[in-house]
Image 1 (cartoon, rainbow, N blue to C red):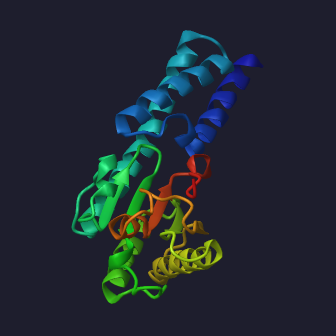
Image 2: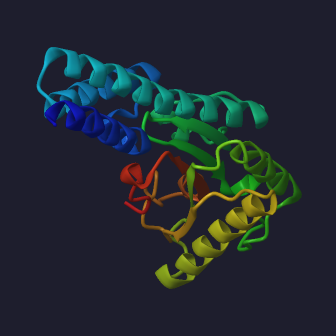
Length: 231
């Protein structure tokens, strides 16, 4: 009976790990493989405790972790290419006023930052023609990744009341989300307004406030790695 039970446990837990592996090792592809292998080995031990079971679990886990890591890398590369840029993981890039569009991959999720000045007229939530085109390109890529969870978050500077900026940030995030869905994507999504809750820099000058006005699109492999985008 035990011999029949062990393979079933390994298979069931491995399947669960593949579906939610991001929480155990979804960094870049090689890190995903290492994290997945470690978790897989633990599953093998739970199922039987033998070296052979651990080795089987490690192999399954490595494959699962590698798949998710590869998917993140591939999504980031595909989106960056479609937008005419590259993947930029330099944290200081967000502080460069010349960078209006940044695609990054932190190993748990992909993030696309659109600077406000290229997206909306002042005080408006209506996408410019150029912004609509760029967001549409992201949507075209997402059709290839229907399991990706999408979160669109809007951010403002500190001029005006918190409530006014909350409405504006929500409306801008919704405009981007609506444009994504107009491309035909079926992804599960969230739309979040953050008002001026998460400034990149203090709102002490026109230059700084321009850096803080932005919309960010987060692409998650599953809900386990969903970020608190307003903190």
